[in-house]
Image 1 (spheres, rainbow, N blue to C red):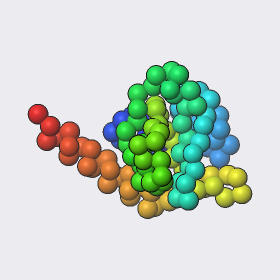
Image 2: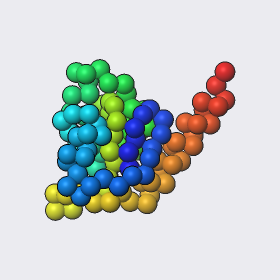
Image 3: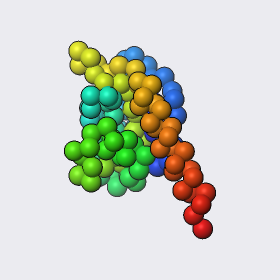
Length: 115
C-alpha cells in the first residue's frame, strides 16, 4: 500500500525485490520503521529535504505504535507493507488496509466540512 500524499492511500503491488521499487516511490534512500502489524518505508532524508509531513502515514504509524505519537513524523511518500518475517516485509494485512481506509474517509469528511 502506498500513501503518496497527505490524505490518501493506494493499494499497489511492489516488486518482491522491492528496495529499488521502494526507492523510486519514496524518492531516495529508504528508512523503515516496523511495528508488530506493518513495516513503513519512507525517504531517509525527508527532514533534510523538507518534504511535507505525510499526515495519513504519520497517523497510521502512531495508531500502530502509540509510543511514537507526537514523537516523530513521516515526510513525503510512504510505502506500507506487512510486518517483517525473517527480515523481509510481508504483504500488507487486511486490518491495516481497513484502518488506512477508515482514516482516509475521515480525512475526506473533514476536508468536505471545512469552509
